[in-house]
Length: 215
Length: 215
Image (cartoon, rainbow over all chains, first blue to last red; front, side, top):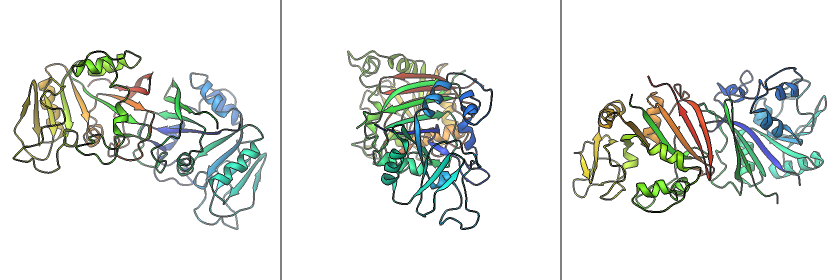
């Protein structure tokens, strides 16, 4: 069974991005600190075509979280660009340049229709028919592998509230951001069976893995 | 040096009490779930004059968090009673009956003056001159031991924002409460040197200890 897996870095006060997100600061003010634990890792650098890097207690968790992913779902805010209808000239094509690091199909939740966007070996499909439809498309596209739920906060909260998340790994970074986008705003008061099954304390981060029996 | 130590149970979504706190539900709807990890422990039962109880991976953390406390600070909302001036007849005397479990001086932050309240071997002193004054009084009263910051959310956030907390132990319970009182609301975006120094995974809870060099 293809699982929907949410993996995200989160501050101690529950933010997955800082305030004032913009083209220059896609993670908001201070939000890049959420990724300080992963960026120096060899496994991260390798995924982004770079050599070298560290190996530490975070490496195995990072490797596991990146493994066996056949498709990714993200919200419009994570894909980026101005809100509202897509521009007809020079539309926003994401943060990742011409060589996105996904290497598999990506489904973007949006209220505004747009033709699929192909960049290198990644195809972005824009889904206007809701989270359930996006999940069905992503499951098919994943060809037996799992589906990653990448962000942002609102997209994650919608899937959590609907009880559609099969596995959640929170990379909890011991900092306060004070404001920004909160992961659990709108997620309700029910984890729908997601149970803490593993805690790993690594340098600069605590990894909390939640699982439930696949239905 | 007498440390100010914040020890509190907190949900995954950052709440230290559920919504709709009242005399019947002092921890708000669902809030009692935050204490499910500690109430069955032998160390907890012993502190409340009961025999028996469990010993597990949470026991040592609970014992440590209760040890070497010479005074407690709490906010008016945690002490309880209606907001506003104290009633002159039948004033609210706390949640704990005639035998409060503190056994040391307790300082209650309030905007409304009130004479000290003695219940068994616990004296509640009502401090109207602010968090710094309450801390100074509590430090003196602790006679070389540490001062506990017990809650509620607003009192904790004030001390955190002012950089006055020397040690913080979060007992993070893997549940969502959805709404209620958030610990870090108003705490700002700076932990003032508090650094994650220990992670303990116990049954039903993850303990995150933050420390900084005592100044």
